Image 1 (cartoon, helix red, strand yellow):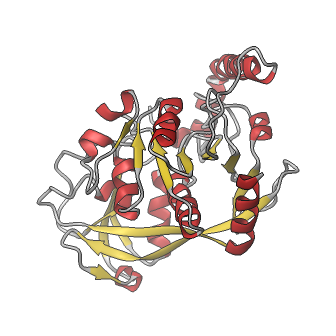
Image 2 (spheres, rainbow, N blue to C red; image 1 turned 120 degrees about the vertical axis):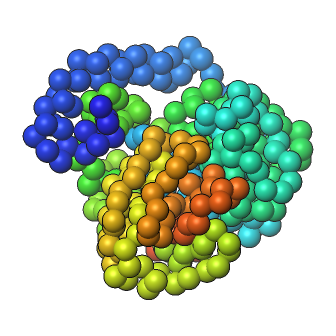
Length: 327
């Protein structure tokens, strides 16, 4: 069963399956609330460090652009003169077990994870600490003399205290149920831990009474396996295979169609899949940037859709963020 498709609630069958899983969702939510409550009432303390830590995350399983946002926040802090490092979990990779300062240069996804490999390709000169032990990552950041640490996808990592927690949120999401009936990692009440909410420019209003900042996804073109850059207009009227291994494949497919591509096939694998298998032929393959880093050593030709995020008012975000970090 493809739960990620079910979570979209597009058909009567999807809605029925989701509803049948509600008892398990209630158990999951109750377990999470107990876990979070241990910290909220002070039975456990979140560990603080002498450098500011900026968390970037969401309440859902994938799909809102946490890693591109972490990259943008790191760029913003670097441009302000801070010596910044990024912490990424390296989900599913051998490096995920602890926390390690990654070596310079291109990272192999099978060793370090696809998201760290993507971050390194976008921020080649920014130190990267890989592993799910985030308090250890913070210890490394302090030891190495960094001025700040950006935590990619760390909103649910409660043991580590942060100066700022930025929460990506989609007010238009149809399914607010917890896993497995829906995509929520925790109940919506968890948004109260955030310092600010980040919302897509076209996505309605925040309901949390927190500062909110608007952003948009910015598609800048495509790059081929050989490094050739082509404009987005290349997709208009062109038949392509859309291939991805991300949490919300439907969004990628819809984006390509909105750009005028004709999708000969829609091929999706589980999030973080290694893509070490035969892919369709007969038409160009288009993938996400996160998937492209896993195909670098493949002989299969492909095009990666390049994407960044940008704030509607970048100066306001930067001013607010630096003020929080200096408090």
